[in-house]
Length: 167
Image (cartoon, rainbow, N blue to C red; front, side, top):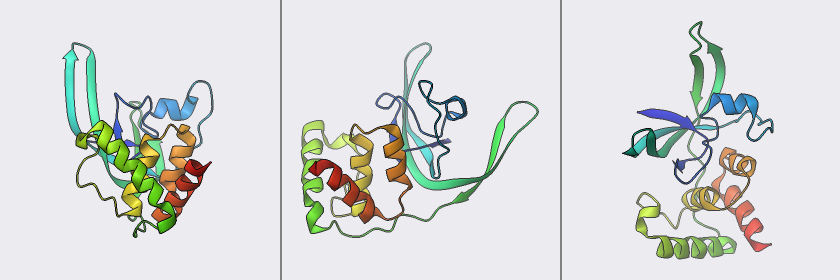
């Protein structure tokens, strides 16, 4: 089963909002604030689910590919539909020397939280993987996370995160 969300690795039990997934929130805004329309969304795969009790559904969704909405419509039944365009993968490369502290931080998080925190393989030499995982777990405003995930240059995303962490 696929769904659309705003960040590449999202668990409903960890994140209060899947950016772009809930149309109603996109229209009304979160906590009364108007949200800007997302430029990049994610196709996601349901990796695991559990129903610990009736009416309570836990879902872990893993982002797979980014896309952009190029047109939308609402059917007479109220069903929202969209035409999409798949976006290319991030421009990736090795982690620059000045951003190695981001890798060390992520290594510490993985050591403390366990290998299961992120789906393997752990690509600690990849600017795209390191920057996406940090953007996912850091306590940043949702708008900042969305802005980071909309960048197609992974090195630029990692450098922005490195600057934020250096403050």
